[in-house]
Amino acid sequence: MTEGRAGARKLSPPQIIVLSFALIILLGTLLLLLPAARQPTAEVRVLDALFTAVSAVCVTGLVTLNTAATWSVVGKVVILALIQIGGLSLVTIFSFFMVNLGKRLSLQERLTIQAAYNQTALGGMTHLVRLAVKLTLLCEACGALLLTLCFRQQGQTWLNAAGYGLFHAISAFCNAGFDILGPDSLIPYAADVGLNLLIMLLIIAGGLGFMVWGELLRWLGTRRSPRRQARPRLSLHSRLTLIMTGLLLACGTLLFYAAERRNPATLAGLSEGQRWLSSAFQSVTLRTAGFAALPQQALTDGGKLLSSILMLIGGSPGGTAGGIKTVTIAILLCDSWSTLLGRRRTEVFHLSIAQLTVKKALTITLLMLLLLALATGLLSLTEAQVAYPHTLLDLLYEAASALGTVGLSTGLTAYLSPAGKIILMLCMFIGRIGPITLLVSLSRRYREQDDLLEYPEETVVIG
Image 1: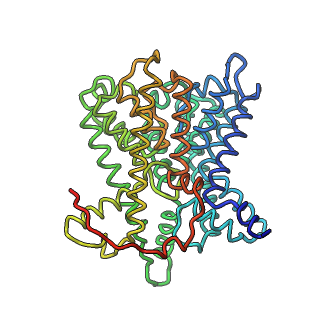
Image 2: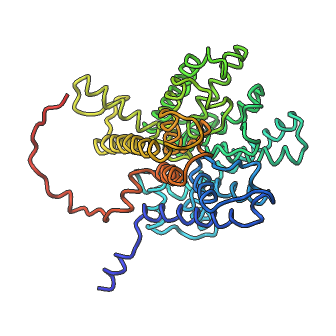
Image 3: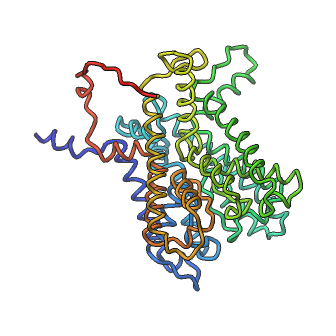
């Protein structure tokens, strides 16, 4: 009886993940409410502090208060810490310190890490944790150094340049989208090729996923090895990630250029080179980063709709990005192609994808689309009387930005009603945790005997 009660009280890995994020959000809110965290003339309400903490921990970047003008150095350090913890997750950071202290990870801890990174195998969790932390710190350190030089060339003092470099390197790699440059974000720096390329590279690096980076590093290591040995083949996951990331970035750049090239408020007034750079930056930042190099409120309807779609797709699994994820969309495309060819299995690269994986991809996509429709519908009701002029497409843009943990906004976020802020906070939380993880954490524990009973099949007419 005692063992049964202990087992009932034991939290499942998804519950641990959800509670860890909620705990950090609560702690961050309390810290941001301290007088030392805000500027002397700034007023911070509890809901705004909570919104900022949720956005930072969920690495989104949507803000109701201007980050540069509202928060003091202490407040900005708190936000930066929340971004770092949210990007890596508290589970990863805790496990990393445990491993480096010589402690062995328990089965429960390994299962939690597996759930946090959506891994299919239980082995290699220690290596994955070490890789995630070391790669994050290395990329952020290199990015901070190079960005410091860029901001120094822009006329900043060395102290300000170093602060800007560190903050934006961490924010970019964690795909957070927070900036401390002012209300115009990176728009004043749109012509700085070096700064834009560095931010783009950090966003892509953080959004690829640590599993992909681990395979790429092993692949490069064997290639440079003086001994002749068989080069390890990239897994199907890594190949789909790299292909879909490349396709989305290229197609996003081309489509955004086509949608905005004649818009005098965005691309029309720029040189040809700057048009392509800004289009590429927009395509990259829609991978759930949230930095703005163009005024988002000035986009055409086509540009806003395209951006909403790309924001909802998001980055890749097992990294710092949110959204439906690139591999999820790739699996659905492969399944649709296999169906069109009359194949019973989902096949790609002469490999079959498990039907359970296909069902999970379909479930995630359907849930995210339903959540997007629900959030947009609710915002249309709660924000009907808001002072900021907006359309239904602007509300869709805000909801997609929150669910994809992107952080881009047409300017509506700062004018949201309390109910609208709560809706976006829930969207950001679900987008970072993942809809399936959240639902599993709220449901009863899975039992293997549930799958032992099989019912007869019957054909249903569709299409």
